[in-house]
Length: 275
Image (cartoon, rainbow, N blue to C red; front, side, top):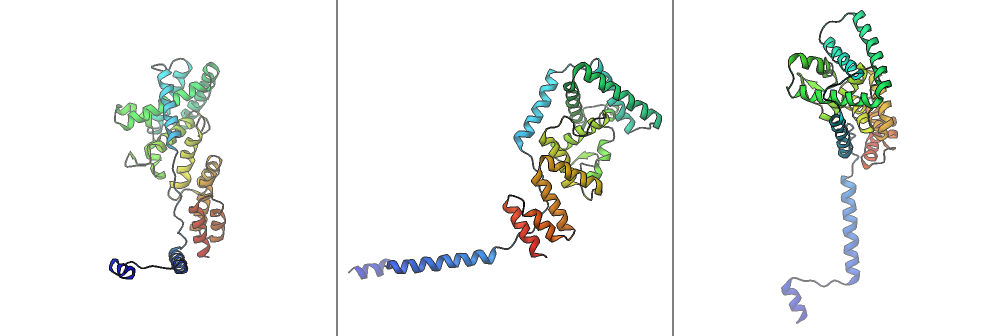
């Protein structure tokens, strides 16, 4: 009776030992499939990504500085702002060596006077003002002469670095604004990343280290070194990928192995498998 019922329903009764045997065979089969498909993943190029919350904090700080600022710069800030725009005009025009050197001296004096009168916060406010002007220029909201003073040669000179193409930005907006902030600092005679947070420095040096096609050796070396101070794992991965591209598999594998990620371990295996 019971046997007939089991046949009709298609059920089979297994003993405990039979169940264990089936389980063991199943596990062994799955393991075999894993070993069949578990090949080292080729090491792809590093990925430049940013913490959205950190980016939002930077953008919020810019808005807050502008909300608290005067409608137009006054006093020592006005002179720095005037010379900053003059630099933009000179970048797309003609300026002799003597005029360039004179303007640099004037800027150094103006920046010192602004710092003495209002502190470094006044420079941060002007930087935020310059970034707002960048947005207005890219949106086509400025007259031609205003746009020239605001952007200077920035679109043209950064095409080499994959930031602009045919006059339009193609890099992520946060990268564009951060590289432009570096331009502002350079014109004022400051360190290129002066006043920048860690995520801004990662955007600045990270783009130059990761995304620039065929960068000059000196630029690449400096970018990777500076990137290491704010994003050490990314800098290590850049070094590893460059070593791999240059045929130095052992060096690449050693660097990849020091990354605390599965991606790093897989890349290390791939690098060693190619030796």
